[in-house]
Amino acid sequence: MKHDIRIEIARPEDAAAVAHLLNQMGYPVSETDAVKRIIQYTQPSYFLLLSKNEVETIGLIALHIYDVLHLPAPEGRVISFCVDEKVRGNGIGTSLLTH
Image (cartoon, rainbow, N blue to C red; front, side, top):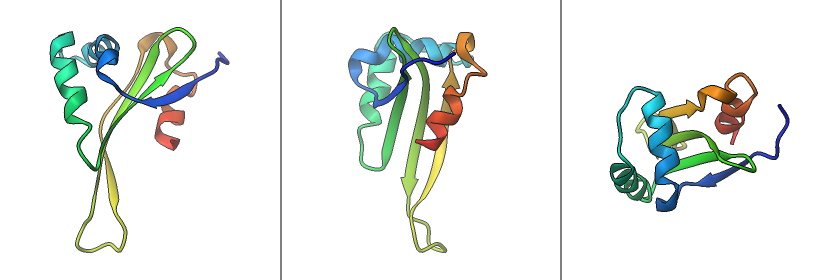
């Protein structure tokens, strides 16, 4: 599966796709709640990135970047990660993690 995949910062208009992916992970989320969560991820040091092909959103990764006392540079933590079940195994997750 080779498609033109792009990675973008989530926006409130992506709420239906975000809700769909979170539901696939077993976390029931309405579109309204997804909008609220997307807005929460606009805070400094939080990121919600979406992987999209020509047609739809096919993955997400939520990140928190923070400073820790014992390291000289910020550290990141993956908070949520999902690739749409119909395209898993095609490198989408790897591209999200690499980005």
